Image (cartoon, rainbow over all chains, first blue to last red; front, side, top):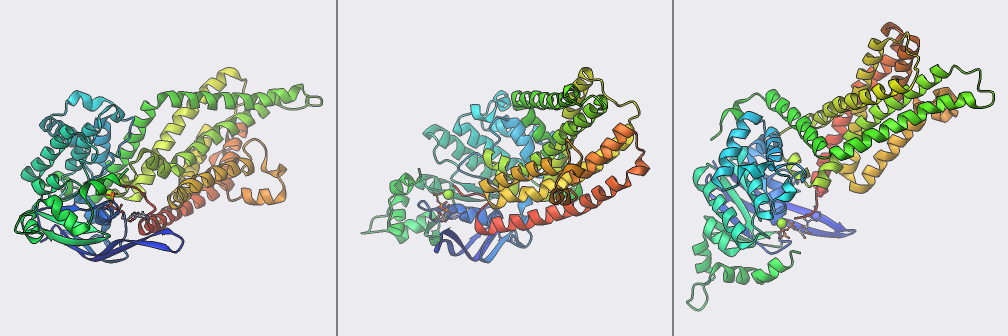
Length: 261
Length: 282
Ligand SMILES: Nc1ncnc2c1ncn2[C@@H]1O[C@H](COP(=O)(O)OP(=O)(O)OP(=O)(O)O)[C@@H](O)[C@H]1O
Ligand SMILES: [Mg+2]
């Protein structure tokens, strides 16, 4: 059974009167169990909308979303239990400590304090997060540390499908590497299938089994990084993923990232 | 990989989630304790000031014939019950705005805990917190004033209050949907509703002094019946059996507002998820 299966999913949003945008334009996508699939795309290409549709926060206009064989539109509660998400912004109660945020997050998934505490300690230790700092208000932690807590929050509920929406965007290089190492670890130790949206070519290449390139709500190409490179090979030279991205989207990665702020 | 959690029955995971919401709110109250203190002082001063109006009336010309102790007790009950009930209403109707402001909205809405669990968790917290806060204010007020509670029937008053809390939770849930549909305007509407409740429900006067159309509106406010029942119980020692006129409407409103609120909220949530109004960024 596939971890995730999208068939002809469409979503339009109304921007202003009479102006609509196709955030998802006939998307079909499959993630096999245990697979890590990356989606690379410039700003506004629909990556976050894709993640929201899967996580049941946005109801698609048409098409089907199945998570481990369960229809996510018809049975959101069943699907929600089996997945979790990390987004660009950390999304925590700023004044509460990491520990309090984690205990709360876990309970929404039916994980008791006792079970959660044990796992929190274990997870935080593994990622080199000083447990003492888990008592400090979130707003005192650096962005990198907050992102680690966000990953811990997702892991706590033992998700079978993890949705990572630009988990390393805006982090300094060191935090970025640490968070990437954490993702690699999740991939190795846990039976989780992962959808990773990112602007970072290297990240996609290093962490993902397959990478898709998304532009204007459509996935233009989806393949193993090596196959993608070969497909876009020019004058006998194998391009790197960055060049593939440019060839497919007409944007440079810098342009894509610059629009962000 | 999937430990005991997924094998837990649904009702148990929902109970754990209710506790999650209550505990989270407790944590928040603890972190924002300075604000809590400020609100407590504010509520207390407000209740004292209003009760002093009763004493003030005595000194007015022609005010001599008034039963001051009774008037003061009447006013204090109004102030306390209103602060309690309006707090329940505010906590619940601010559920969405609060999460939006903290940025946790999407994580709450993508969790498997049901919306009923979420809103009831908020309700449980609001009730417990409201009772504690009201008790403090009452305690201080009793030191200040010579109240007329000699033949009060506390049991009747508590029963009415308990039933009314449930209707108010339902009322709050109906209102809570508005900030979901329209982030800013929605919350503004809930504050107006709260203000109207204060005006029409006879918090500091008998409803009969209001113009006819306001009296007509008053019959739809659970606060009207709560105050009626509680005042009869505390001032006149009315036994439970004689409070039918207050209890029945409250039970009815609770039975209507809670399911109605959950249903309306469900529709609102679907609408927000279809139009992308839940959150718009990232
Ligand atoms: N809730 C919404 N309401 C209206 N328009 C929306 C909404 N969500 C997304 N859009 C629009 O849909 C398109 C895709 O947006 P989306 O956020 O999915 O892109 P993205 O690839 O995640 O971009 P970024 O890299 O900036 O995060 C954009 O044009 C955006 O303005
Ligand atoms: Mg995005």
